[in-house]
Length: 80
Image (cartoon, rainbow, N blue to C red; front, top):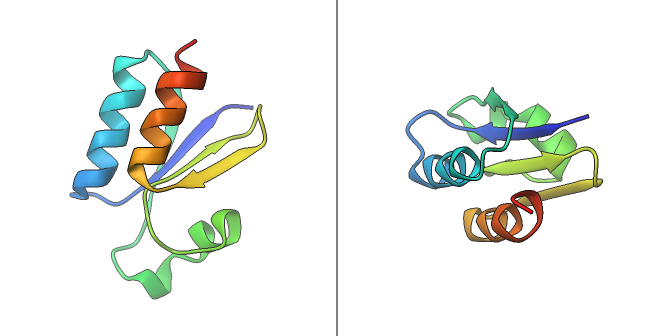
């Protein structure tokens, strides 16, 4: 069970989350999503919406979106 980031290539918010995870030394897997919102069925399935970034922390049962919230979670929970 690990950490998964759903991200869109070229998304600046996704890059910020990626950088936070990397800086914290967190091992994670990236799932690249389709550019069209209507094609993001997997993101909708796991998070209830189609926007990215979305972070899934399976070990803690956490799924979240919004880059600022994710970065705060990474710094306060995962980096510990």
